[in-house]
Amino acid sequence: MPVVLIVAEQQPDGNLRKATLNALTAGKQLAERTGAELHVAVLAKDASGLAAELKGHGAKVVHAASSPVFEHYLAETFAPAVAELAQSLGATFVGGASTAMGKDLLPRVAARLKAAMATDVLGFEGSGADVVYARPMWAGNVVAHVKLTTPVQVFTVRPTEFPAAPTGGAEAEVRPFTPKTEPVKTRFIDFKEVKSARPQLTEASVVVAGGRGTKGDFKEIEALADVLGAAVGASRAVCDAGWVPNDLQVGQTGKVVAPKLYIAAGISGAIQHLAGMKGSKTIVAINKDPEAPIFQVADYGLVADLFKVLPELRQALQSK
Amino acid sequence: MKILVTAKRVEDAESKIRVNPQGTGIVPEGLKYKINPFDEIAVEEGLRLVAKHGGEVVVVSIGGKEVQEQLRHALAMGAHKAVWVNHAGALDQLAIAALLAKVVEAEKPDLAILGKQSIDDDQNQVGQYLAEFLGWGQATFASKVESLESDAEKGKHPGVMLSADGKAVVVVREVDNGLATVECQMPAVVTTDLRLNLPRYASLPGIMKAKSKPIQELTPAGLGVDVTPKVVIQKMVPPPARKAGIKVPDVATLVDKLKNEAKVV
Ligand SMILES: Cc1cc2nc3c(=O)[nH]c(=O)nc-3n(C[C@H](O)[C@H](O)[C@H](O)COP(=O)(O)OP(=O)(O)OC[C@H]3O[C@@H](n4cnc5c(N)ncnc54)[C@H](O)[C@@H]3O)c2cc1C
Image 1 (tube, rainbow over the protein chains, first blue to last red):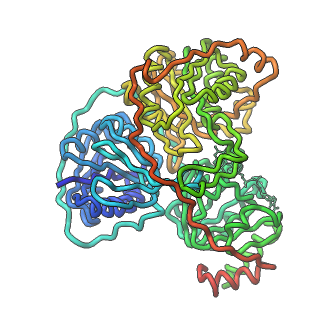
Image 2 (image 1 turned 180 degrees about the vertical axis):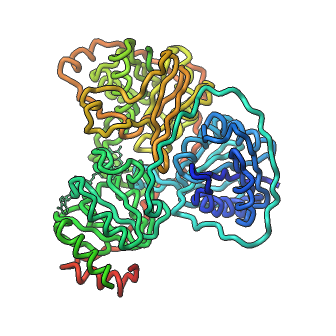
Image 3 (image 1 turned 45 degrees about the horizontal axis):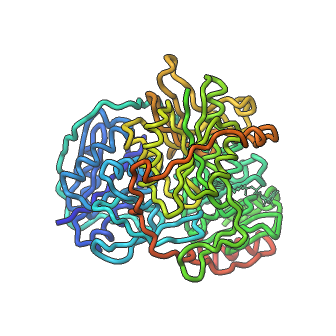
């Protein structure tokens, strides 16, 4: 039976990155379209905990590789291991989530498998070997339907387009695997984590985002976020200036989010920013320029000075 | 150091991109073309590295004869020579990486710096494919520790550092939840993120000088690369439109709408 192999991702804190569950749903859809079996691979210093966690999410087999080599993610150690596993299974599809790791790793896996690849897949069409991937181009101004004509096909999926794979159903078999290791030319030095007590941007159900209009003063953005239990997001201008960590950039080349509520304050709404948030359920825009393009995607637009209305909004929601 | 950088020709980031009625491509009217912004950052980083450590920057572009404009732009910024792989048809990331691998084999750079993605295809693949094809290390999404308004940036210091023995590059990468630092032995592939540097403008003397710098022409056939696309675009469609929203006069109305209409707070 053909195999769809999804690569799971461990966060630096040791937990499973939630986007893995969205990728599993995409993998399940693809497996149904192609008559394949869904497998998932997890590579870590000690993969047993994550493997156990992944058992109940719809995959038939969880492949677990535990090795000190995998303590810190590097494309050069992970790609050969994933490619070797894919080859030994005869997997015809290999994929994962479009996270920083997925985007770094999967093209290198594809290169090893001489496979063509689709990045940021939004959905599938067709069936069997004729499966077609829908994916964004030009900052989401175009959705392209692409076919990959290589024997093995590789992809990353946009997590916001697929629900998280639920638990329940049959338990997967956990199979340990021990990939060959090669000497590598890259060494991990360190990871500086941006710690925050707020929810993760890509996982939050509410996001409060600030732009250049904040002039770098994020106090009111953060205060409103805390009242709503929201994550904080930002435009490129804000990250470039170093006002907030780069990790908070929403857009074409940053994070793609689709919360139930996205509040954009002092953000003009450049196409590159819209590419990262226009899938949100409800969008609120606060901008003092009535012509700002952000209003074209906003469900509720408030033409106002953010320094005046953000505190009012916070107080109104706080006293609710 | 010898540094190879890429300069893809893409639609200007400010352009209004629309799918044509046939769904076969985008409407060409009114488009302006530029060097891919991430590649421009790659060119800049190459120039800063050779300004600090000595050496030369070779810029490569693949496409029809119009891509010479982007090569001239990179030469005007200060790149030393250019390689043009002449191919007018469709190209996918596999083919581009295979062509670049051949150019790398001929040029033997210490470092290949590419944009992390091009803003037309948005694939984010070529640097990684190239690194694997060459058996090199990769440091994708290269960034700077300081902000783009820092003194290091104003001093035009490279964000990519050399190790103490000068045999490896130390790169700060933008990843989820923070910044990861890796060290890659050279030769290596680096791909650029937005915050690695602010590219310089081409100066007038730079533009004049660029006119006499060499552009070497190559072809896929000459390089022995089959460029038949394996990523085949069957059709293009516009993204789903959002329904038009409303303007609210004040915070009270906004809160009422959020509570009672959208029911999101
Ligand atoms: C290759 C490339 C990739 C990019 N990727 C991204 C990306 O991923 N994400 C992203 O966001 N951008 C991205 N950009 C940048 C994008 O084009 C815009 O430059 C950026 O989004 C602008 O940020 P901004 O809206 O905060 O700033 P501006 O465009 O300067 O807008 C500031 C807004 O604040 C409003 N304002 C000012 N003061 C107040 C006030 N007191 N109260 C209320 N409103 C006020 C103004 O009216 C204005 O609309 C990219 C660009 C390129 C070229």
